[in-house]
Image (cartoon, rainbow, N blue to C red):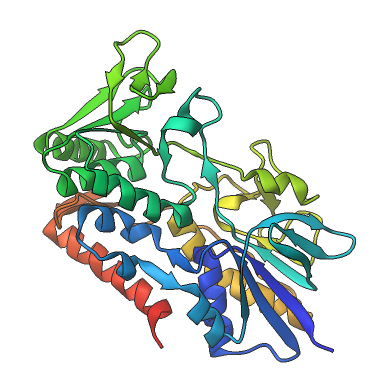
Length: 362
């Protein structure tokens, strides 16, 4: 009788797991992918899609085709909870799915709970698998006044991409108390600020948003900001369904995992990417983390299936960050070194295309 490996979510780590098992199948195991969308977007190329530098399909992984190459059944649905005792994952659109080995990579949700009106009136960047259709509608409507709330890497890239795509619109980046690119080297922050100014993107900082209304943004003391559309690029929040898993969660509600990406207290359940809280040390909710976790997760799922000990995931102390400026230029930083210009974009484009080629091939 075949045992069952169930992958919940089509995130960046799980596409690598599928590629891994396509290259080397797991004898005696049946593989199922339960995912919300038939196509998994790659977050690294989405700003380029917004800017018009890539076609949508260039940033999308056909996850059903990838699952088929891995001999996996692809079920398009969303998980709603887990019965740990029965080893079953409940889903919205059908019967629960059993598992002998489970991995969760469902991403995060927008962090809108602390700001009244944000969930109703803003377009969140997370989860990314739901973003493209809503962005497509926004770009077709061509609003005259755009605001991006949150000036981390995603917010900066999206603001610059919107400027490139809608040159006649006004774009405001709401950086709040944290400012532009918090946590980045000062030189990178300065170059990003210069790029925003050169492309006529207004920066509003010093106060966080107090409320989002149909007409725009409200602040504690500053004058309201009138906008036709608001994009929400602040931090990630834990998906509500994780509360129905029975698994240990951290203070923010994310699934606690150990150094080997196993759910705390579980030998047969793994989690990674934005939905997981890495117990050994805090990690950013960024696509690069899930990409790096993918090969480790694939090896550890195989080890667990074969009765071997898993290996720890060892995060890099620093990694290369490349931020698109929307016009075939980029800012790159690693280990305190900052570069910018067309060479940085060439490198980013090359890395992104090479990543996608691994999963889009026949």
